[in-house]
Length: 208
Image 1: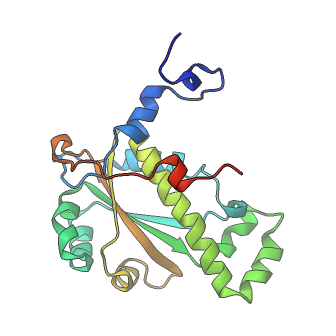
Image 2: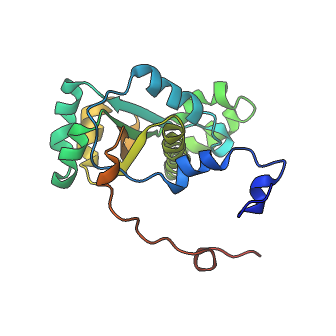
């Protein structure tokens, strides 16, 4: 089979080019949404895929609150920057992607061989714990986007919100801190902006 991209014909090319198109090339950040719900089962399926992605020593610090109900949206709305309110209120679901500073408590289950040693190190170094949590939770937030796109949803990741307010409203009494938000649903395809530029390989990469 002749293809414009020869690597696609290699035996170890894991997924189809159509799948890559869906997840990366054709996918866009959505800001307008169809009035079509996202079911709890689909949100669970997204997480079920995303949770398998690698994190540092399997610490898995990300925590996700999916804002779907009218009551939850009412709590979220005043904490958004003005420019993000309309699109978020119209989105069927909004994931609050957070990171748990107390992720060490789950290490006996997730990483039993290193749990005791890591917990001792982190107990005296909260800044290290914060860096580890943010780094791996950021990865997990990316996995959520890839999984959602792979299961047929559009995504609208964004900042632009009151982080302290979100933490107080949704994560009170916990060690969880908010990182970013991601609207999820079925976007209005003809509403997307022209794709912004991306850096080329030679601008962003080096092979050493």
